[in-house]
Image (cartoon, rainbow, N blue to C red; front, top):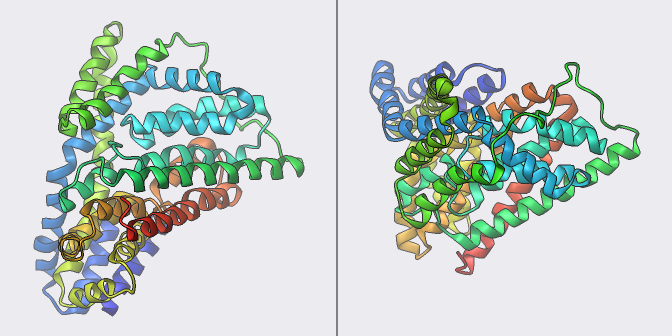
Length: 427
């Protein structure tokens, strides 16, 4: 048991220090195996690699197609066109809301949150400039729209954090719709109110918009496609995936083909964008698979049964146990999908059997797992957090406090509320 906890601590420490999880995870796995007295070579070549390869085999097509879809939406200007139209409808006086809604529409439509950050930043910069809002809260504003309720809470979202539980609990992406909608409302409302409070606080202290070192244009004068037509690929993913029960791979392929047909005048640059999306997806899938490989080693050691026993005997509904397991591992790895992958690869079958035995709907376990993956994952060493800071030019010291409040504390509150709902049989 000590070895498992030590391995987790080492994984978190190395990730926080900026080590790639591709080699931090095997190191942490070796510590777990060494403490358990199992064969080190076998732990790596069999347990670790079986977990690594298994996750890659199951999810690589989704990662790759999702990244290509996002890149094409970015390259063609369709993502920016949608965002600009939304912001004009909402108004510059509600700049924070405009950024949140723009991010939410794009991520719920299936675009990778990393792509959304790049696409939204120029727009967010222009809105914050016009509204004279401090850039300190820009990272948190983007995080709320892209990293929270559309990633884990809203039923039907095609983001990977809502797809992984499906195989473990025999559910669909629409699992536990009441729980999901309630959680989404809680996250969106509380996080937005917090950001408005921080805006007023900063303005009262004399902290307003300051131009970044390298001034960037918002890109609003570009020859962008029609925003309403640009919604078609996003709607295609959501409708075909949820209403017509297409496999997510089929839904993404269809949406990609629609983008290509709608932008034939830019066909000479298609290959470049598709290549960039496919290449970028490799890092994402490899990082997540590495985390799952670590979980496979943990599952293979004798002490794992003791760990499972402790988790399953936490007082109260087993949904609490599930939430703790997923969010703790998401925090340790700095990855929502990675932490969920570890937890469900190791404990998913047990939680599914527990759902059957206790009469709790497997859909509730699905939604709690998804929501829990989006809690502690957004710690300082999270890849998305590092990306948004790099793009916005802000630092942890300047802006992380607001991300922590809006994208960590608020989602945890939402999880607690929906678990309470589930205890009354409301899914």
